[in-house]
Amino acid sequence: MTRAVQKRTLETRARLIAAAEEVIAEAGYEAMRVEEVVLRAGVAKGTFFAHFRDKEALLELLIGTRIDAALDRIEALPAPADVPAIIEALMPLVAVMISERYVFDLILRHSGAAGKAEIGPIAQTFARTDQVLGEWLALGLFRRDVTPALLSSGVQAFLIHVIALHFCALHQKQTLQEMLAELLQAWLLPGGTRA
Amino acid sequence: MTRAVQKRTLETRARLIAAAEEVIAEAGYEAMRVEEVVLRAGVAKGTFFAHFRDKEALLELLIGTRIDAALDRIEALPAPADVPAIIEALMPLVAVMISERYVFDLILRHSGAAGKAEIGPIAQTFARTDQVLGEWLALGLFRRDVTPALLSSGVQAFLIHVIALHFCALHQKQTLQEMLAELLQAWLLPGGTRA
DNA sequence: ATTTATAATTGACCGCGGTCAGTTTCCTTT
DNA sequence: AAAGGAAACTGACCGCGGTCAATTATAAAT
Image (cartoon, rainbow over all chains, first blue to last red; front, side, top):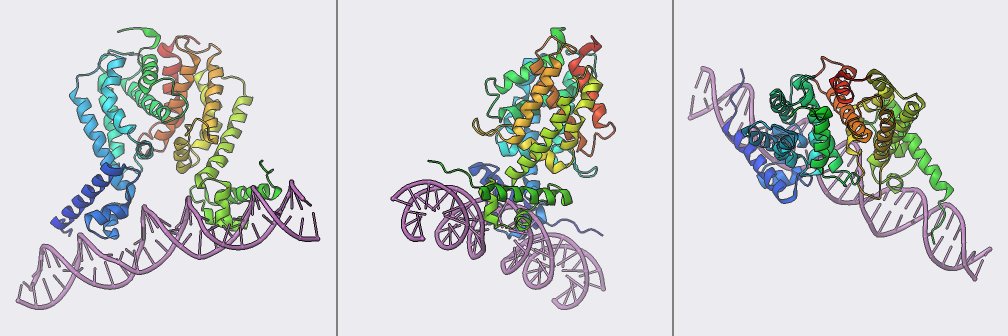
């Protein structure tokens, strides 16, 4: 018989999250130290790991929340009808992903479900992004010789690709948006056909 | 006036690399411990870091070497003329990248040049892959409405994408090759045109 | 051969993520 | 109100990557 979760637990968890967000606001995700977080939250180190599997589990939660907020804004928009509009619409998501190199790497590492049962917060945002893109691309404004699901999978691949290039010291003659525009134009409207 | 590098240095470096390869052969890249390597090499811990900036710098070197060997095999092949042949040709590269989840993550993290001056071994293999792909795609057997450089950039993006999906607990109804075939077919021969 | 400058090596030490046996707090049962 | 048991919390401890002042080996200069 499982006991109900205590109010104290929720408070401690909230204090840990608040402390972490405070540290991150001051110094960024990469600079976050578990010891600093527990100090500010006023709990012992072990308590942190009673609430989160490891340091990355908390970061995943926080970053997942930020990505979800970006997707909320994106979903509130009308479906984009051309490539520039798609890129424009995706900018809130891009902003989160390029905010820190460390964040991008962490997102990549957690983009896939590690286990069938346990789909992490970031993996969930990837599924959600795929769904949003799929809806846009199913409207029939882009190429129709392949499924919208395949198209959206490809858009995600290109999105990751250009962000990776964005962090590369070479490849900086073009902006992220320019590179993405070229790729998506060729992917979604091959041969320059349709409108 | 710079002194010549001593023979002793090269020997120590070689012993460190050999020890690391030994450990990796036994237990994999992720299990490699600097302390185990220096123990087997018969040197102090500090010596390791006199030869390699950090643990990842050595791993980058070793993995970069493996990727280069794969690219050697790939370059020895005749240029593939269709999508299945491209996928078949890329398999040595894929094999390295999917050998360990940890290896894939490390490769992604080092795929871009960190600084203009210092292009790491793995970033170099990405440039080389791009070049090999570019040559294949410039032969005119695939779509010609966009540059071969753009095509090869896209192929790399899809390659990374399907490997990421390969490590995902979901998306396992299709094999890596099947997913890659769908994407590349749509990317390189949109509308099913040409041969 | 001796001195001298530099390169190479050493290992005690630190920072930080993560563990776990022991303690405290909370809630239920009687 | 007391007892019993489970959940929450604690902090000393460990593993491992990485640092650096001190030491030793090497080769050039005299």
